[in-house]
Image 1 (cartoon, one colour):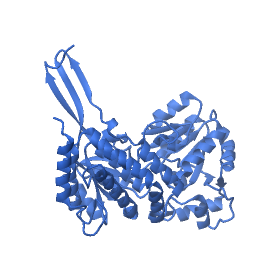
Image 2 (cartoon, helix red, strand yellow):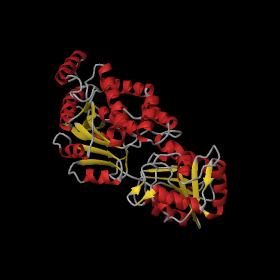
Image 3 (cartoon, rainbow, N blue to C red):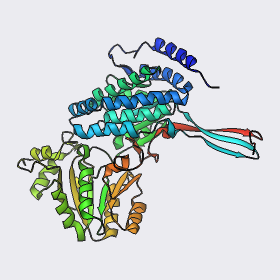
Image 4 (cartoon, rainbow, N blue to C red):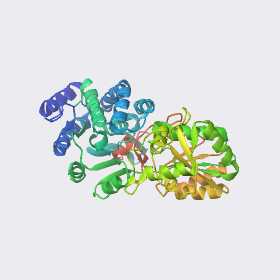
Length: 463
């Protein structure tokens, strides 16, 4: 039976009064708590309201989240760059508009029906309840907003344990989301977070009885921890996306597309081109056009210095991640470079550490291949079985097909910059949680729902 607007309003007022704002003495931001258990309890109360809301009421909340995301896009972008030191403001503004405009809402929640002589059967999508989410510092607010839209569209609420390096930005987004809900008469705490997220708060989330589903967006260690929790997990892990270029490609366009994709937000998106595998016949021409589009061809001496600067015995140097090309070059003593320098390129074997390792910075190694078969073999090796993202520039459909089958990734972009995969200059919806490891691929509202079958036997068939 449908619930009318007055009943919804009464439920909301009761829950809001019970929770008295955000429930945290340490934070004035809505939905931000000092204690993980308190955050989960508050989200559970909000979910009771959310689950009873008609779909169009959830969509009202989502509509305001979209508007507020656009209004605050510049603030969120500047905040993220200032707090994390990664990426650039202009591209982050674009990413927030992309999230606001192309993240699916309630339209993604569809019912499947079968009607025949024996009656009517429906499969409907229902909420899990309170979802636990772990988010990265590379796309902090974008991931929080994107996840929340999809999760509340499915009738859930969410508790975030954001990356410690992006607390301020993540919690600004959480507060904004709760303001959006209250603006249309919805409950507070539809999204919750931590004043100080830690490994301990993460452990509490992973073990809590009221969290049936965990969505983790981050590195391989985070995803492995989530998948070892004993709960249902959606794992969006690492990638090392190769871009293959064969002799049939429009080389000038391929060069521009690769540079644009690789340098977008200083290579922070996990889908971005991380290395190039070029058929030898066109490699020199490709390099020429890449230099024409703002690439700096590094000497062996510079590459060696970059290797020891960017990669430390403990892993990636976090001070290099998400930095622009000129900053990276200054770190190794190269200062007199053209003003339009956007990307650092060099040639090397696939095993070179700056090629084999996912860097998340505009350093692009170029590997030569004898032919398309050799290029595919090397690209598959470089992708390391992450099954995340890959790219190809070719006009040969057979080559594209062969590559797609061999690489077997959640995303395959043909003849376009990598960001076309997220609907930016390409068709399709946007997401910042790409669950390659657990198989969901590009997540959306339907990903965060359970399938429930409802059967009416020998009735309601009027054909």
